[in-house]
Length: 218
Image (cartoon, rainbow, N blue to C red; front, side, top):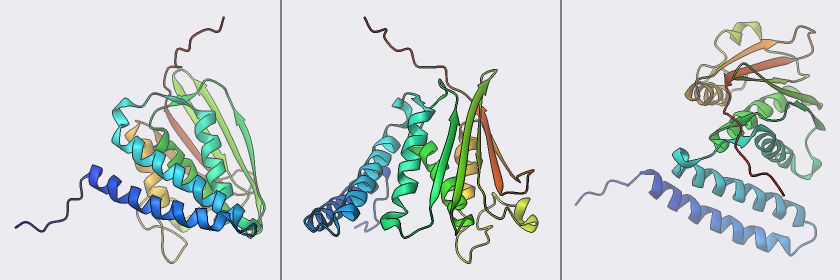
């Protein structure tokens, strides 16, 4: 008898949904105590994001393009939830996004932004601002994310997107994941220290989806 574990995507999603359900029940218990109600709300929002990711992974080919503003808003909400209880530094987000930029695989692009935001927040232990801009031109989108940290150490800059290259003792996969997703959509990402010396800068360039045709309102 074959005792091998079935690790196909549908089975993994099934198992994850069981985990999500356990977390939902735990969050519901916490919600009854006013002291823990905000924590419960964060857990429930994270569960919904997790469910959305697993659903999207199963229907990648069916995904329509989504506005970058929506993807960005979801990623910022996740980043802010990670600072649960106000115990982390004060992080601000300043966005300058040109309307009309649309991307497919919304879960993947949220993951790109969340990883970049997480890196930026770790680089600013005393707080600071993350700047996001997005522009489109000649069929390409250009997304720029800047922080106010200490910048990227010169000795790792050239290899920053390789697996396990990091200033942390454990880690270094986040930026490798970013590059992998960007390349899957025929884009490129580069990292640099800001010219003004006030932190790091990540620039993503990729083909932009044509805007979704939306019905006109009467």
